[in-house]
Image (cartoon, rainbow, N blue to C red; front, side, top):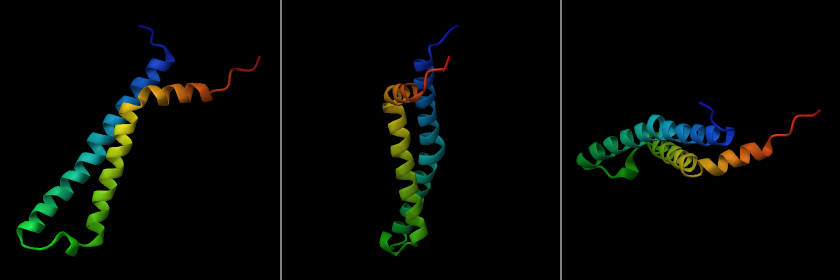
Amino acid sequence: MRLPARDAITIGCAILGLWVIVMQALPSLSWYAVLAAFWLASGEPISSMEQSRHVELITGLVSLVVGLLLVTKAARIGAFILSRQQPPEQ
């Protein structure tokens, strides 16, 4: 089975985006959501949490945005990568 380079790069970008979402964004966001729920259940305001806990939320959100961009813009990223390649010199 032969796969054109553009299609291979597009599929690779989409798979990389899904990996970033599943392995980076979801664990960070889930952990923050659980921690915030326990924090609120104990009657404490979210603003009283340590700053390092909020960094986890920001990291998860950035990972989610990067993953979604890789998935939704995979064709454009593939076209950009291929257009940046120099033709072989003869």
